[in-house]
Length: 264
Image (cartoon, rainbow, N blue to C red; front, side, top):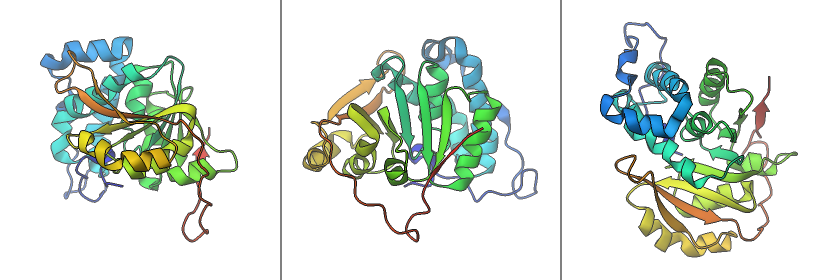
């Protein structure tokens, strides 16, 4: 997986906030630009204040702790929050959503903020990221709709109580064939993988369509989300889980420490 959330460039190694090597980032860089205000209102509706609080956490603690690159902070709204929130148009009301390789919470936390009807599980293998995710859930009081799973997608699929969702999201985590192998076992039968992609999406569909089929997925479909609201629209590859394919046996303890859901 890439080191940065959703494929963003990672920041420098985390250092103690306030140290000479890393002055505290200015939260003003996360202020919603006026030209994006209408799009943000449409996508976040009455929860724009929560989105703004999350943007500030990304631009400050997220940068200090190396989850967001410093150069990404001024682009948090257009490149990250609005880009992720636009995917909500593909998710039905009341769905359970699993966000694989959640990193700093993109797109899972954004969807939970924009869509309070969703139940979201953030799946992330790195402890320092899950600590940040837990802190954000606490800060924004999202306990009723968000939980954090510390482990890999493979751990979640083979847990004694396997984690399942109507929708599985992933943002710039891996090529489509690997994503299908990790994410389709987490989707309920008839559920969907929504992979947020970049300019290579169409090529990936051609290259990996056969592998997706072998893994139980239907034909990948390309969507442009948020047209007329965000520019550029968010590119999403949708794959329906049409068939159940056996999940490979879990590796030894040396290969996987397993996963756990953090409960309060």
